[in-house]
Length: 102
Image: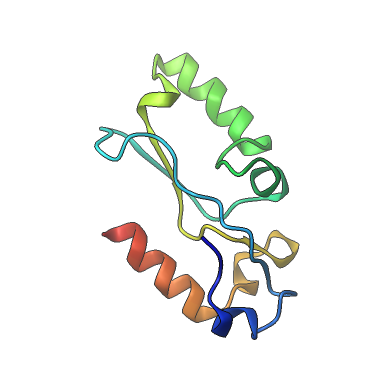
């Protein structure tokens, strides 16, 4: 899935148009939600695989929680410029938030 033409016209300098999908079972009992993917997440196409993901994995392991049983999501599935959520176009944030809440 890619960003709509309308959003692309807003400028690729505000976000990376690479889509990072949610992962894990849709019926998971645990939903882990991040802000937006970072560089490593965009490169690997999976959420929480960078620095925050390594911390998350350690915390889950300490808690006895099996990561593959969790649903991993981000408020926005696109990497914002300079990793600053504030740089994302408002209509992208609103559409992503609506999708997450479904």
